[in-house]
Each structure stands twice: as structure tokens, then as C-alpha cells.
Image (spheres, rainbow, N blue to C red):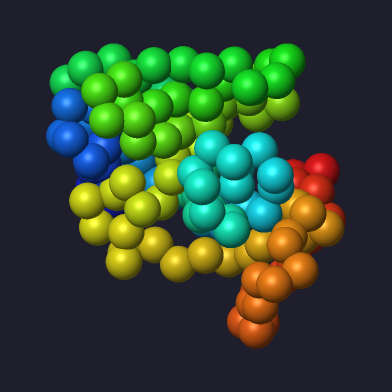
Length: 137
């Protein structure tokens, strides 16, 4: 007998844009890249990676900003909350901002990526692996 599929839900601040993930979280990591910092207005952000086929949007469709060739950043068009990241480099994944989950405390970051781009005043004294570039490179 197979295990039941875990379902996770997430949303923007105004609750207009929602998503459902009906499958496992593949990974969770902190990203320090400049693009993510600028989009979120924070020193780094945390993503969960899931299969695109396991994710669906409910409610209002997110807006899409193409921040660089092959990269899409999804956001709520009403309140502006960043929701997800898609890239041609990862064709079978979508990366959701972990804090948009209804229960972000259920995921635990496993590593840091784009460590070389971190801000010098960000102190991360955890024991997580710190990758130059993406963990998938």
C-alpha cells in the first residue's frame, strides 16, 4: 500500500493568490543571490523546491515578471507578495517562497545557496552546507 500524498497550501498576504502542492518537498534552502534579495527586500530568502506537476494555483493567477532570460518570478498582482520562482534551468521544478506556506514551520532549510553573494553583515552561524552558486550546479 502506498503512502498518502502530503498536501501543502500557501498564499499571498491578501489571500487572493493561493497554491496547492500535492507531493513531496524535494529540498529547502536559503538563497543569498542579489536578485532574490531585491525581489523580497530581505537579506536572503528561503525556498522549497517541488515538482511542477505537483503544484497548482488556486484563486487569482499570479503575475509573472521575467527578471532575466529563462527566469520567471511569480507574485500576487493585488498585494505584490512574491510567491514562486521558475527557471528554464529547472524545467521540472517550481520553487515557492517557504514563508508563503500556511505552515512554514513544517519545513527545515537544508543548505545555503549563492553563498558568495551574501551580504557581509549577514551572520549565519548554522552548520548547514554553504554552496557557491546553486546546489544543483
